[in-house]
Length: 543
Image (spheres, rainbow, N blue to C red):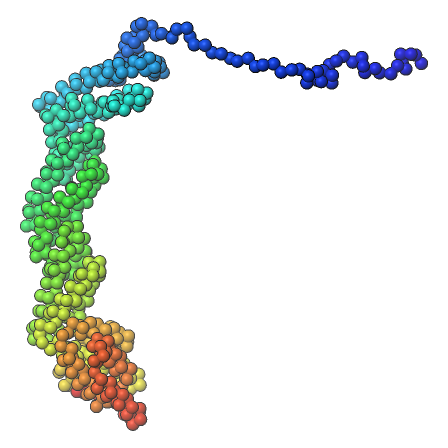
């Protein structure tokens, strides 16, 4: 084996570049960092001496191209950079003044086209609208977001354009008069049923709003013309139309004016406009409407027309008060014709019940269950039903008696032979029509009434009883009839008698007939102990 082959590796001969190199790096001492110093220019950068004029000529040509609707030879980026450079070098006030003068010169020359005397009104409005829209588009394309925002004491370029347009065009007396008269002409045509350009109306009215002359220049004259129109229309139509047709016309007019507010009029005009329509078509004619048509509507039970009448009168001051008073007067007048005429005694109760049902339905449906109308209805019934002393009370007692007997018949009929039923001629003579009324109300065709139907009819009649002042007279008649039924054995239903006494007690309080209750208890005791069941085989109704 050679000497070289047996020699061991000597790591000390490795150059100092591995581990030893890294150790040397750790021993390097840090040096101080050098500061970066930026020095100012020895002299401020300067624009060329003719930069201002050259740049303005460039900007001026761009503005004129916009005003004349011609193509612009400079890019928007180039124009924007030019404006920024001028603002950064404190040339913004000069630039703003020159732009103002350029715009003023352009707007002032536009007035000449509106001074021709022979121009048609509609063509005049079209030309004005075209000029206004073009002006708005021009001012939108000219912007300055630096100088104006930093100086609140000067107007923005948009506001500057509005001020100039108002000063040189719309504040011209002749031009403003023609614009307003043209607008009023179109609105009047639309009110007469013609079709007009609502887009044109909307644009021009927005123009007046933007120029802040809508209120003084247009709104006052518009409301005055509206008042004149509807004042004359109200006077004429109240004489020409029936009340239902007049109410429909008023409702139509109010809806039309609301649509105008929605489509082109300023929203601030709504209250005064609708108030003017309501005043001239409703407030000025409330008494005439009620005197001319309310009785007809109530007599014919015109539910939809009465509902519309209530809705319209609720829009004006004291409208519902006047309607309620007229409604009360009608009930008293109509009710008095029912109770005061002796020839109507046979149909009195029927007519009263029908009349009460009709008026209740009107209060609930047409007058929206208004409490004042409900109280007025009760007061009117109480007034007229006592115009004829004692007679309504007597007839209602007779009707109660007939209903009680029908209830007895219904209860016992299934146990008895129908051939055994007979009604005395005296009862037929006294209660003829009333009995027929009860029968017609309680029977449908050949079907017989149920006890529930009879109970509901008793409740209806009890409503009439509440209006009677002479309840003592009613009580006397009732006690007399009750005694007759007990003596001749016709009250076969203790429950029915108790139900009737209970109703009277509710209406009369604790003073409901105590003798009648005692008689009923005595009769019931005697009947259960002494009355043979065979005596029920024949039931004869007699008085």
